[in-house]
Length: 267
Ligand SMILES: Nc1ncnc2c1ncn2[C@@H]1O[C@H](COP(=O)(O)OP(=O)(O)OP(=O)(O)O)[C@@H](O)[C@H]1O
Ligand SMILES: Cc1ncsc1CCO
Ligand SMILES: [Mg+2]
Image 1 (cartoon, rainbow, N blue to C red):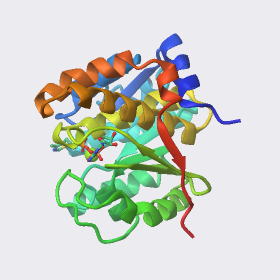
Image 2 (cartoon, rainbow, N blue to C red):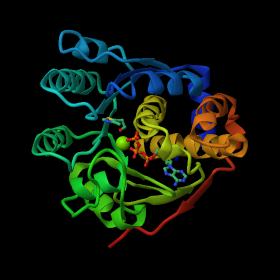
Image 3 (cartoon, rainbow, N blue to C red):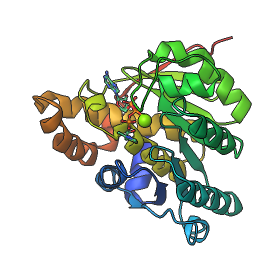
Image 4 (cartoon, rainbow, N blue to C red):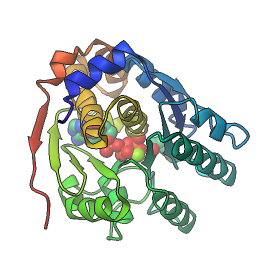
């Protein structure tokens, strides 16, 4: 039996999960505020000295390679080990994984650790799937539709639920796929909202029985809050505070009205 976004938002607000977020320097503050607004408890704990131990008390771990360096990688590996030992989910954000050989190497090693969910923009997912992408830096430059086939292959080869975000999001676990509409064109003009969404995937994974349901609920929460904030925003600057307000104000019932549509699984 799958769990609806409405059920999962009710569950997370009743018992706010502690989520260990190893994210980049740009995203740390933004993502922590996004998680607090959504109703969760974020902790940006990443050093190798404590990351494994902390993962033992967290409901989920999220790993983001945005501002990559060897100390970050050591902390990521420790936290992933901690999550695996504790039997907890972990989520990967392959920021700009196409950009350099260092990123390509690190991201392949992380995918081999079997993330529960991989969340990226279309350029990142195309690259992870071994296809050509137009991405250069951290911003997506490919349409989500172009990454659907790659997302299916990546889901099957890695065992992860793959969430591709953009104007219309796509989530696939190899057997099931959905598209989620909503959000706002101001979202890609606000840095680190994708990184924050990856952390929110960790939040929902901590409370859900199934990783596909978790990814769909996290993306639906962003889609509904983003559309709400768009109504009152006149640009990316005024969008940002209204988005935080909307994340907090979204009632579980509102998620039952999110535009989630079944999609065909590519052959
Ligand atoms: N044109 C758009 N219209 C509506 N929503 C969008 C649009 N582009 C992105 N979004 C939404 O923005 C959120 C972040 O997705 P995006 O694909 O921009 O992540 P990202 O490229 O990894 O971001 P970052 O690396 O800056 O954190 C998702 O909820 C997505 O649905
Ligand atoms: C701008 C930027 N640079 C490295 S990570 C990051 C945040 C968006 O991915
Ligand atoms: Mg990103």
